[in-house]
Structures are given as C-alpha cells and as structure tokens.
Image (cartoon, rainbow, N blue to C red):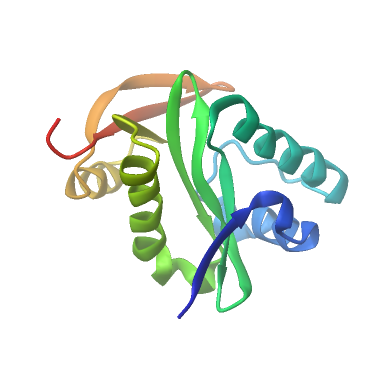
Length: 157
C-alpha cells in the first residue's frame, strides 16, 4: 500500500464531489451541504488550498495506490491547526495510517505545539479521542452546530 499526500488542488474535482456527497460520509459531517456540485467544490478547494499561503499548512488530498481516498490534514480554525480526515468508505480502514501521517507532519515536520479536532459530542467519539491522547478543550459553535474541541499536545507537553 502506497500512501501519497498531495495538495487538494491535485485531486479530481469530480472525485471530491463524490466523496463530499456520499451519504455514508455525510452522516459524519454536520456542516456539509447536500448541494455540493463541481462549481462549489472548485471554490471550496481553492479556499482550502489558500490556507497554505496564509498559515503554512492546509488540507491535503490522500491517494492510496494512486487512487483518490479522501482529504484531510490540518486546517486553520479559530487560531488552531485543526485535524480533519474525510475518507471514502472503502478507505475507512486506512484512517489510522493516514492519521499517523498527519500527526507526524504536525509535530515532527511543522513543529506545532498542539492540534485540535472539532467533533459533535458523542460518548463514542469522546472515548476514541481519549485513546488517541486528545483531551477535552471546551466547546465551540460553528454554523449553529455545537462541537467539542479536543486538543492533542506534542509528546512531552
């Protein structure tokens, strides 16, 4: 299995639309729209990619054995580098490998002190985040939806 992380602009817009419109994926994305078409997707990709120039990091496209698997990485959210990971269902089993790559980039390559992850409040997610070493760091609201902010510090902090 070969994992490649590329700029989001290198992904095929049609594949990103298919991912961000997939009903199984949408169940985990409370802020997603049902009307995500190619025009909206291209604008969304360009906005996400512009974070690289502004913050030195931004979302990436993930390819497994040359095939688009999803997007994620770090995106700027309220002053923090926030973890995102959105995969096609057939790649959900790859989540941990991709997560480890993101964590390595955040702490080893970029030298960040911490990252966050914003998730809707569920007991299952709370336990999963604790197993990964994240701590509860309060609540926030985005577009009328309540999220729990989890924070992961670099080792030794």
